[in-house]
Image (cartoon, rainbow, N blue to C red; front, side):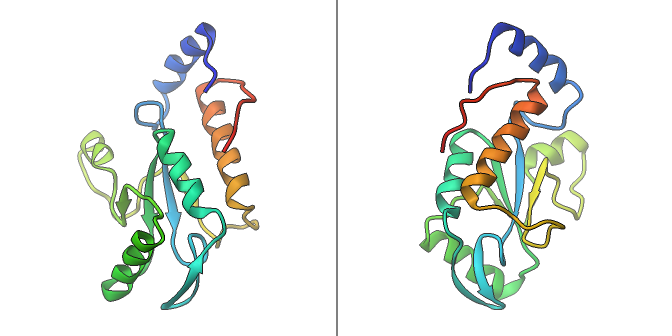
Length: 151
């Protein structure tokens, strides 16, 4: 990311009022319909570009939490599918321990800066466009203007 001295100063001020951890986003991603094309409980195939996109976001230091309603053997199927397809994540249906420590509790809802779900009000763009939107959002939160977004 492109960061000038002025950007760095603005970043420090913004972070005092932001929930990001270490200047990075926590991103909750739905499984069925978002990461994988499914006919619940059958998992058909990964969405185009998802593995590369989540890998890229993790490489930038963002935390990826898989947020799914699947339970029991069906959540195991989702985990195994993601391992087989080499789709990276940090946590599966659990909050980031740093959030739990910071707030002194582990709430039922996954705590994140962004939520990506196929059930959003608007249609989701491709994974490549999602990454670019996330990068722009992250930069805006930090008060940085930069056009160096590549995936």
